[in-house]
Image (cartoon, rainbow, N blue to C red):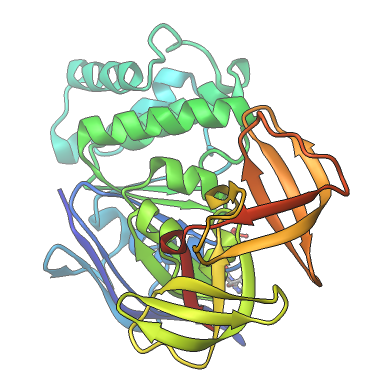
Length: 356
Ligand code: ATP
């Protein structure tokens, strides 16, 4: 197993800083996701870990070894690409065997050993029996499994996955993300996963790094990043948020009170940093609201229902509160009418205040 460390990694293409002073620590056996919008530098970071790119500044370590300038094939990584990159003229078996065949001499592998390992890899991705098919005779999900088997068969120290599920339909994506998590956990292989899909990131990762404009803005356990975003970008990119700008008017033990003019109330919230003063933003997730005011409790707003959507497992309501609006997810037993008055409150421990 391998721990990956990036220290001050920067990569510049002409006028674009694709990766800007990135520092990351990826633990042994971890499934680590780099999440961010298109063009934020995810793929470049992954390619630097793979060795396809050399950073302009900074260092990459596998355990304590500096691999910054080590050639890709010396790093014992394997990468799975978005478009699978299978060879159409080779069978499933030969696609998966390829990586072993080119290392046959170096690894002193017999044909029997190659066959055993290919079968093992195909069984791991649940593709037994399809060895003789060609890629074009497979569904997208099966092709993705072949790509995964081809990466795993060489027993890499590090598995790199670049948007591996984005060519699949929604249902298959959910199925495959479970599969990837199952396989990754059963092998305990350090894995770096790149995606722009926040749900995918939250559902499979041990840790998520949120990237924007070449920089890692925050990283941690999915729950930590979701419940305690430390910056506006993360709060908006991961899940949905109601965000209001305001000013700190009171500070106490573990809380701040923020005057939010547009809502016409003072909001009590948990500060994400100590010494949060002046202008801040409060972030309230739509699922934290309860219907009805809590007597004597802060964070209660009254508004007019502006829009209602029944979503099966919940009802989504947009409330007009003064000049502002607010999205709340309510239990599916509620279905208020547009124009109705509604009072909602948010427990202050579920509301956070972040610097702006
Ligand atoms: P996507 O999700 O669209 O693949 P990404 O987050 O993976 O995006 P990168 O592919 O890492 O982003 O690109 C980051 C920035 O660097 C982009 O502005 C991109 O245009 C630029 N870039 C990447 N590779 C090169 C290159 N070889 N030459 C010039 N610019 C590049």
